[in-house]
Length: 477
Figure (tube, rainbow, N blue to C red):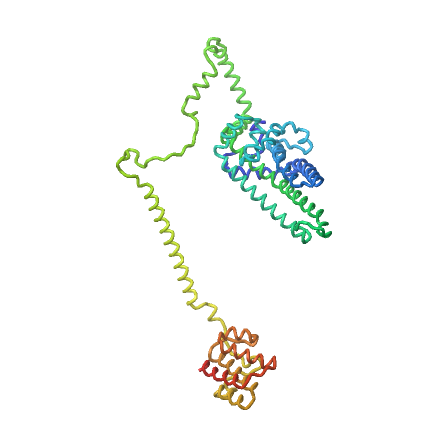
């Protein structure tokens, strides 16, 4: 496989753009990828779940399915790696070419290297496509991961969170659909509880099938994103984009290049045929001499502390106040943040206070409140009431007309509220809403007494009516 055969556009990308490239590749070739992936995952899952059901150890089946994840990853990478170079693999052909992607699989399953490695989606192509093993593989992974391992680790973290979210969501929905009481363990001699054993087995099998479905859906995304990181890293290190561009230029100008090479061969062939010159040149020595040039120096990232003024040597007699300077700087920053928080809170409170005090535009358009002529079947016009309501109510109570006295007090209180106190009572309000809008203890007691008299047929005593009339004068004085 040559870089010129790539069917994707090669250019220098950031690591996150490279992961997006991997997802775009999966979006383009999802049919062969998922077909080959399902052809391996589904039979393995069904066999393991059946064995777990037979031996009453579904948890062991789930553990074995998790342990075999390197197998599923290799199938996805096998299809993607060939699709990138223009070779679309059919599902059955992937199984027939199992020798191409099985290399190192037994070691990976035995040591579980590709699961414990947080950058396994990025390191998998090194082991499978390049065939590196042991120390060579570790050095190659270290070289390629110098600028991409951090993104590969974060890719694993994001994938684990997506997997956990899908598992929890599917498990919660399964719990909603299962019969009530299934989560309780059967026990005792109760035949009903003992009969739930098979149902609990079904619940555990459902968990295993849900886990297999989640892996079947999510694993190709994870492998494709890591493969995109791998391709981008090799492009940056080995100049695949430059090589592809040069090859395309060479294809367009093949005739001219062949002519130039022929002329050069004719004129310069005697020079190369000189045996003395051939003996004097050693390819290894020439390569070593070329690599000594500063243009071929190695790259290494280091982090170290340096003085701002390196020309001034530190005075050994001066005490080191770096720690106290750091504390003072931290306290100053904390005070600055607190000051900004207080200032923003004060500004917000001032704006809120002004908003409450300023007149609203809708208030001018709102219609003025018109007191209703009657509420709860009682006339509220002031001219329909006596001049001295509490005195008239006291006389009615003395005459034994307790209901009429209580009704007069109630009418007078409602009239006072809507005509003098500005309480906006409407005909649609209930008595409870009127009590809440009035917010007066006396009015609440008066309404309670009226309810008991009008609806429960419980007449108050003369003293209670006289006391309400007295408080009426105190309340509405």
